[in-house]
Image (tube, rainbow, N blue to C red):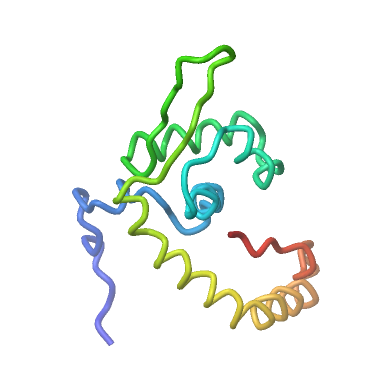
Length: 134
C-alpha cells in the first residue's frame, strides 16, 4: 500500500464548492420536498419544522445561490414566495435516492456500531436517536 501524500487533495479541488456535503441533511431534505413541484415557504416549513428558521432560510439561500432551486416572489398581498427545483437541482434526486437506499439497507448495522462504541468507550449517543433524513 502506498503512503498517503500531503498533496493528496489539491488546494484548487472543487469539493469545497459541492452544494450538498455529506451530513448536510437540510439541503437534501429541501430537494426531496420539492421533487413533485413548486412549494410555498410555509409548505416547506411543515416537514422542516425541526430546523431553526435561521438555518432553514440559510439552506434555501445556499440552494438558490448554487442554482439548485429558484425563488419566485409573486406580487400579491401578502406576498407569496415559491421555491422550485431547477434542472440542476433535479439531477440530485437520483443521488439522494441512492443515499436513502444505502441508509435503509445499512442503518441497523450503523446503529449497532454506535451502540457498541458507546458501550466500549462510555460515550453518549448510542444508536437510538438517529434521524434517517430525507
